[in-house]
Each structure stands twice: as structure tokens, then as C-alpha cells.
Length: 597
Image 1 (cartoon, rainbow, N blue to C red):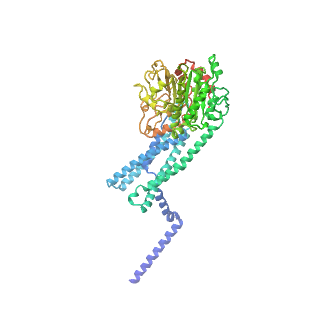
Image 2: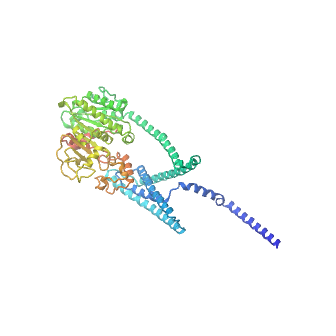
Image 3: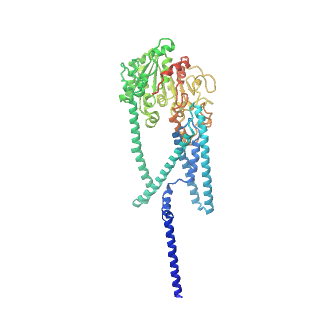
């Protein structure tokens, strides 16, 4: 019996060795199963904290459908990518938050999902994700149709369907990278927390990992990335400001800055200052149009090259204006430029033609940055420029006998309108201080704009408010609006002070505001303007980024739409100056003098 047991043990040992040989042989023939599988599982466990959760995917993809919806302007691939990505992040956060609440409720209820419920949830996930993929295809098709409609409204050529698809793919890729980075931050924070807890008291460690990682990221982005990027942008803008403009030569008329008689050198006027001094109609052009004698218009301009403070530059501008004979004209206009010092040629030429050259204009440059960058980096400079220039001009006018003082007007576009309006305490102060003004594309965060819009006549639309009987202030969406109110009734006759606000319904610069993130604007509750699709809807967060993405493209449309104010200046200034002129013929006469700069 003992021998029989020993033989059984030998037999069992033999079978064990045989199974081991078979396992080794299978491992050699399929190395992934034996050796790589633990590594794959280990890698999967390491990467799982970085992967998105499906609740977030549902929220993000749903938000992307909304982001593909219509806004003011036709989108390019990069504006589509930006809008889609930022909206997906918002939707992902909402979905992840809902998942966290669900999990918290499960823990509090001590409910553990069964195998059956887990299987049902996996089936539900698969069905929902499949529906999301199909829904994305439908959203892209609808987006292409809406983009063609918007392009027709603003008289642009529609973009290709491929551009919208490329923007969606790039935006989604950016979202994935961002979500992965955030998950990486969470994992890094947890590891930093565990490391610090070894050497710090337990009470000091709960937020320590997050604070350490956040501080490192903030320091890198603030002091390395942001400072380097901004300094390079500033340097590039300063170089561009000094570059010569093709086809421009210093003016020969002493009434213009940069001439031999001027106190300012032509090269020191800056890029746009040189264009302002060189371009525009002369006395002979104006006289030929009216078939009667005309005067040489005065254009005084101060560039940044002088390296003066804004108040000192304003004093210098008034001195240059006086030298050129600006205070001897009947009409004096203070222009507040946009970022980079640009002024609208249509506006200047309209004044010069309508007054037969009996006018003077004065302006100064306050930055080399574009309006968008200046709005972020330095919103105070346009305000200080307008206030300083108005103060110095007004002080000089007060030294003149009342009968010799020219009528004082102001004008500005975009950031220039924002700066110019800051000169006055309120709308009453503005109309009492000026003979007239034309403001175009005014950002709605300008206090006087808000004051007037909120005080509009009951029933008048937000995008084109009626102010009283229209004798002092009028809002215009297109040239025909300056003679009658929103109901089609004629305005009352103009008073001595006349102000017109030009604002297109499709101008994102006017309608952009941070409150778009959480609050539906009044104009979303009203019928859309003549160049805006009625399919445009407001959504929290998403609409803010849609309109933000429209802003860089607002200068790519033809005149009369978005942030492009051209021919309508002729009608506006004819009303403000009180000159009855053949507008269509005057527009044709001005057009050859409009040169890009």
C-alpha cells in the first residue's frame, strides 16, 4: 500500500511537470498572453485615471452640437475649433458633475450595483455613445446649411463643408488633450499630497498637493509663457508701426502733420498716422465735386514715436492743430482712434467734403497694439487719450472769442468710441458739450451706451433704441434709419446738438459682453436684425464663446455688416453737420481715396 501511494505521488509529479511543459510551450508560442498581458493590464491601470468618463463625454458632445449652431458670422475652421472646444469643456464639466452627484448618492444610500445593473449600464452607455456619434453627423450637416445662410445675409462667400468638419475635429482633439491634462493634474496633486503628508502634519496636507501643482503651473504660464508671448507681440507691433507704407509720401500741404511746415516729422507719425497725413481729398478734389471754391482741410496727428505721456502728447497735438490753422475753421473734430491709431477714412473724407474743406481734425496714437489686445492689456489708455485731448482742445477754445470758436464734434469707432464716450459724465453732459458726434461699433460696456439703451422708448428694440423724439440722439442699423424711428415714423427735427450711434445687428463687438455666459441678453428675446439669422439662440456659456469667436472675423465682411462701417458715415455726417448732400454721388467721389492701411 505504501508503494502504491508512492507510485501515485510520482505519477502526480509527472503530470504536473507535463502541464508545466505545455504551459511553457504555449507561452513561447504566444508571448503576449504570458508576459505582456500583465504589463498591458499594468499600463491600463496607470492610464485609467487620465481617461475621460462617459458622463462627461455625453455632456461635452451635446454642448458641441449647440456650439455648431448659428451665430453672427460665417466661421472659419479655427473659430469653429475654438467655439467647439470651449463648449465641450463646459459640457464635460456638467456631465462630470452630474456623475459625481450620482456616485455620492449611491454611497450615501449604501447601494452597490449588481451584475445585472452593471450590464444594463454598459448597454445604455453603448447606445448613448452611438446616438451621440449619429447626432454629431446631423449637427455637422445642419451647421453647413446655417453657415451658407449666414454668409448670404452678410454678403460673404460661404466656407466649404470640409472647413467645418476640420474645425470640429481639431476642437475635439484640443478638448481631449485638455481633459487629459486636467486628469494628469489631479493625479499629480494626489501624489504630491501623499508625499507632503509624510513630512507635514495631517491637518496641513489636505490641499497641499493641489496648491503645489497649481502654483507650478501658474508660475510657468504667468512668468514664462505669458510674458514671453506678450513681449514678442509688443515687439512685433512696434516694428510694424515703423514700417513704411507703400505708395505714401509726405504731404506737401502745410495744413497736414508730417509736412515741412509741421512740428511733427513724417516718420514719427506711426504707420496709420502717415496714411492719415498722406491720404484723403485735397482742396481741388472738394472744389471739383461741388463746382465751387473750397478750403484745404486740416489734419493734425501725433504718433507714439515721440515717446510722450498721453497728457503731454495731447498738449502737443493741440499745438500742432493751432499751427495748422485748425482753430480758424468752422468745424473741429476730435477723433479717438482704435488700437494702433487707425482712423476711418470714410468718416474723415465725408466731413471734408460736406464742409467744403472748412474743417479740422485732430487725433493721437496711444498704443501700437490692435484693439482686441489693447482691450485686454490696457483699457485705460483710450479713455485717458480722449479725456486729455478733449480737455486741451476745450481749454484752447475757451481762450478764443465766442464768435471765433469753431463748432466742436467728436467721433470714434470701436475702442475709440469707448474712449471718447468716457470723456462725459452722462448723455446729457455729452450733448451739452458738443455740437455733434458720430460713434460707430460702440462696445456695449460703455456707460453712456448702456444709459441710453436702458432709457429707450417703450417698445423700441434693443438693437435700435429710440431716444425721446430723436432730436438729440439717434441709433442707426443702416443708413435709412437716421430719418425715422423703429416704428417707421419720422423723427422730430434735429436740435443744435446731434449725435448718431452706428451699430450693425451683426456686429459682435457691439453685442459681446461677459454676462453672455450666464444671462440671456434682451436682444435675444426680440426679432433679429436684418443681417442676422432668426435661428440664432442663446445658451449659457456656449453663446459667449460663439460671439467671442465671431469678433476676429468681424473685419472680414463687406461694408455695412459686422464691424465694417464705411459708406454709412456719409449719411450720418450729413445729418450731424446739417448738410443736404447727394449721398450716392458723394460716396462715389470718396471711394477712390479709401486705401487700406
